[in-house]
Amino acid sequence: MNDFLTFARTAEKIGATAKKLEKVALLKNFFATLSPEELGPAALAFTGRPFAANDGRTLNCGWAIIKEALLGVSGVKEADFRSTYRRYSDGGDTAQALLQDISEHEPWPISKLPDF
Image 1: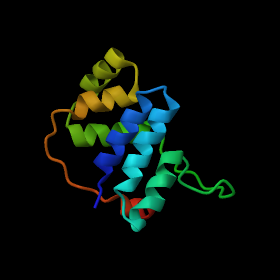
Image 2: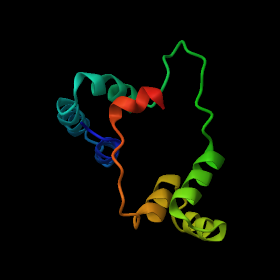
Image 3: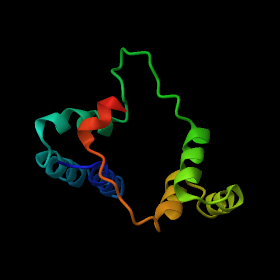
Image 4: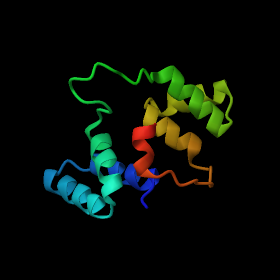
């Protein structure tokens, strides 16, 4: 079973390189570790589109929802969140800074992505 943390780390490596062949290799190596039940949801998640192109649904998961989730998980106060965001000016970097000291990791199977 692969968990979402492995997916996220793979995505981070893919985002860190501009080399197309390296991106393909990283994705290929990740996909090779997946079960058939995990492969479809993982491939769909890597497209960045949770629904088919002809499906009008959207996630409606804006910055306010993400911020509230980060505040809840990290336990930081609003002022500390704002200070951290001003330091990085990037949502992903802010989330990483807020969550880096949280050592507990509860595996979340990629196969559950469609249920999300």
